Structures are given as structure tokens and as C-alpha cells.
Image 1 (tube, rainbow, N blue to C red):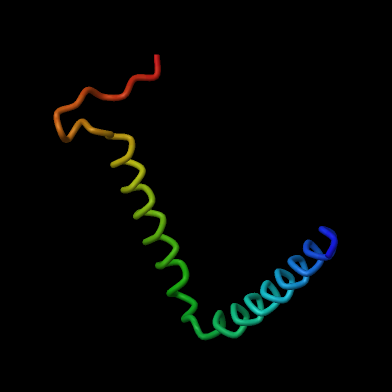
Image 2: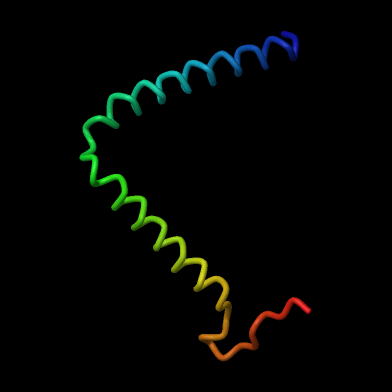
Length: 70
């Protein structure tokens, strides 16, 4: 079997799976309440901010020195 055949099969499987996922997403999305999406987006955004702040804080909560870039 040639290497090209393997990559062709992989691409075909990936394309098929991507099409299935897009179809499922289209079926699911109208069922969401319109006002739920912005709330969910804001909740996820604030969660990411909180995680980012914790990461930026580093080990200072444990008494370690703050990270310095310069």
C-alpha cells in the first residue's frame, strides 16, 4: 500500500466526520433558547478570565516570588 492511499483514506474519513458534526450542530443549534447563547458565552468568558488571572498570579498564593519578565 502506498503512503498516498493512507492519506487519501484519512482525508476521506475526516471529511465525512466533519460533515456529520456540522449536521449535528445545525440540528442542535435551533433548540437553544436565543437568550441562552449570550449568557453562556458570557459565563464561559468570565470563567476564562478567572482562570487567566489564577495563572497570571502564579505561585504567589503559596508564598512564592511573582514571575518577572525583565
